Image (cartoon, rainbow, N blue to C red; front, side, top):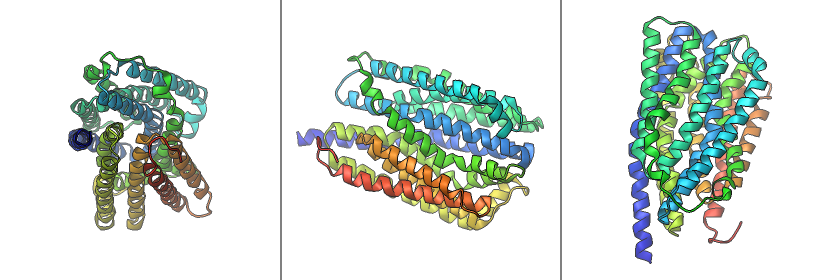
Length: 427
């Protein structure tokens, strides 16, 4: 029995490593496309209009990721568990897709109700941006369900292909608009919607392995923890992305939001690479736990934490040495931020990445409530820090650092406690 568990743990560890490398290939292109998109659109429309583009970008990824990443996580975990037991996953995929559709409907109805305020306060009267936001969020809902099927069934090549297609289309679309001299924000906004939608349509056949017939799935198999996961994911994306919206609200008449996002792009380069680790980590941890191998679970966490710390440290060092130069080179002389400010943003990014590793561990252990408490507390700290009577930039920087410290600290403590509790015992 021990030999079987060791073999399964080794296979799971190998899957995480190979999955990370495979997904990483697609994420390199997707991460590059984010930089190309933001750089070219900023140069085309200027700092003032770029504030609206940055707000659109923030809302797409706050609600697209925040509302639908939990479906990828739960589906990936459930499929990996079923695979370990030799069971087909079609019922659990269908249940997940139904739950995601309900969530999407709620978001679209809420967006329609708030449309005039959103367009006036955040998009400077550009209705095209709101419509593009709705289409982009719908496309991301489909993306995360299919990615959960890819990750849970070990189809990392398809996962990578979806990322790469989205990134490639975004780069090509932005390049064409820029070369044509397009200086209005509408066409750039639509690229955020068209690229993910096309990537889903072209990679949908890759879900076939996850759709093998299997035992019926009760709602509890995929939905019992979705409430906690949704709360955690939305709050986590709030911590990661609300800084741009906060800058827009705190400095509504200036170009601070556009300047800030430009610097944030430079500081957050390591986060794009880390997403490959995160996507492959959770199914691997779930397989280790399904095999009853706690040592393999702890070993994989230690390896990922070490790698994440190294990437985060490199990001801080790179920002300290070359941050302002890279910002000016990429976005142009109109965009500038102090060296220390960029270092602070890089440090907050590193802390956020570490917190995400702890989150994956807690999700694998089914400690979803701890994740929700950690991220909601973190977001509350962010909001409170934005009330400190200093400049808008310093408020947001303080809010980012403190909120990430709270998230990483709380979840590391809960993970340490939970991972050392024997199976069947609550803490």
